[in-house]
Amino acid sequence: MDKNLLEAVKFDEKGLVCAIAQDAETKRVLMVAWMNAEALQKTVETGFAHYYSRSRQKQWMKGEESGHTQKVCELHLDCDGDAIVMLIAQNGGIACHTGRESCFYKVWRGGAWETADAVLKDEKEIYGSTH
View 1 (cartoon, one colour):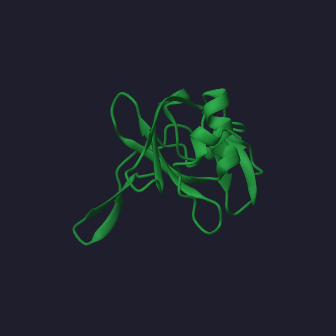
View 2 (cartoon, rainbow, N blue to C red):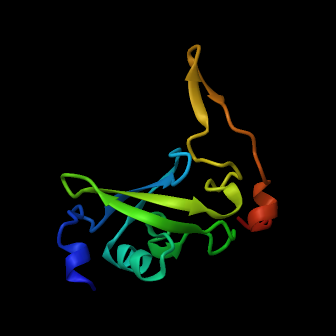
């Protein structure tokens, strides 16, 4: 592990840090996930976003199943060291597992959550029928 990379990061009690993927061109927030030290190290080594899945309890590279990889253009660490923003180039224009550009596709309007983004590709086409 790269000490210079990791020493400024304040991982929580579970060894995780919040990681925000933001489109490098449009600046739209595409998704929020978690990284442990290994995921952060792999992200830097490969140039592609890696995360830690809390539900599956394992490392994963974004796009390893879907092909919607995230090429990291820049990494930013906040002043407290407890959040990372990655400026990324999103392969295929889809970051959300629902087939949308962003995981943040719901907008609060008139007292209800409305879906603001169209599905660009059906989940079954992305992951098959087993996802």
